[in-house]
Length: 85
Image 1 (cartoon, one colour):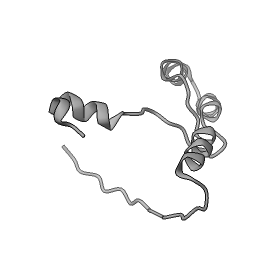
Image 2: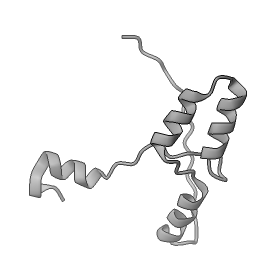
Image 3: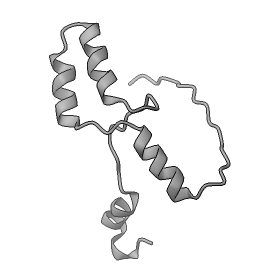
């Protein structure tokens, strides 16, 4: 197995808005495609221009797309049972 190093930038933002208001705006700006349709359309693309169209339709106004979402609480409860907080 090879190891690949990826550089990531992190930034912090302070807002006067509530966390709930920030999350609502973030949710609205991120694309949430139907992943089964997205996978099908990506696989069906035969040229890079077609792939760009598929991806362009899936991203939100922020230029970002959610691929998956995990409920960490549910995962911890599966692992720790009712002891999970």
